[in-house]
Length: 412
Image 1 (tube, one colour):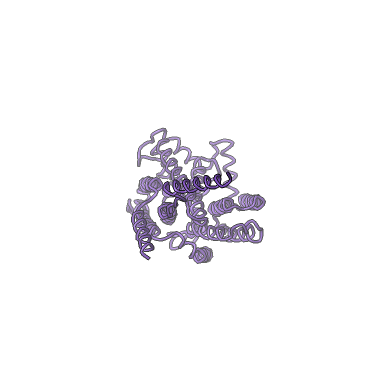
Image 2: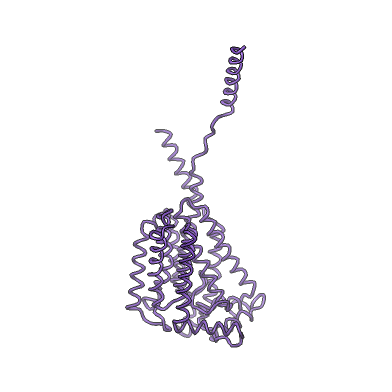
């Protein structure tokens, strides 16, 4: 009984010692991106705030409120075992699907799309990214080797992902639906799906996405405009052309924070989808490389947390969150640099948008939780007991030696 009490006290001591033991490299990446993002949000919205609300800090204060809410949510997540998400993943997914359905009924159109509730202050599609990751991580980790069977693996996976993507496509929002499908496919792949399933799901998903891009009017127009850019950058659509001008105007060190000219009208949505172009104009190539370095550090530490997770659920959850933030950043930057057709998707932690910032910080909080849990699990592992001590080894050798001599004497 006393030994059990001692072990319990030791576990409590270890848990207390790692209570605030974070992955500091991951935390550095997140904090660095948030700082850059808040600076760029103020730089790109002070003029817009004066014009629309007669308050230069209006949009900055809204972003600051979302930041505060995200920090509180992340700190709360850090107080619990991440396994709690497994218990509520079905409920979260059901609530998300309900919100996506309600949005299509009562949501108000904005620039031809219905994406937000409460005067566009909350976008359910941002919640859908996290909810899908939570649910699929739970679902895949509970299947084990059965997921290689089409009945237990590919078919349910396709239905789950398809329902979410269908509701988001109806907004319409092809970029977010494609992002969710890409994240889900990656999780399905790393969970150990059979190659046949991967080929079938990948081919079917790509065919559906390409057909939507060619048939949905606004998506087809963007593909056509992107093809024009590849042939002649001077023939690019206005938004792409202005983004490229902003990037090119920054040079190596930029024109200075707040000194951009493209944000004052020429570049539409400069504070949301096009913020990376303004960052390149004001902070130059150096600033862009710093942001890319922070994003790369975030992805590296996220996959490191997945590698060290104590169970398959934590592994899949960390992979999903890391792919979400990494893929989304990659798509946004690829759009701004005209590598892929133009689409509206925010840059995590940097673009203006309270819902995007809130759930990005929550995702980072989950990664910090998993990484701290991995460290805690290592500390709580019982020490390996030696099979024999040096004293025992010596005594055994002596006994074996005496037995050998005794047997030799009897033979003689």
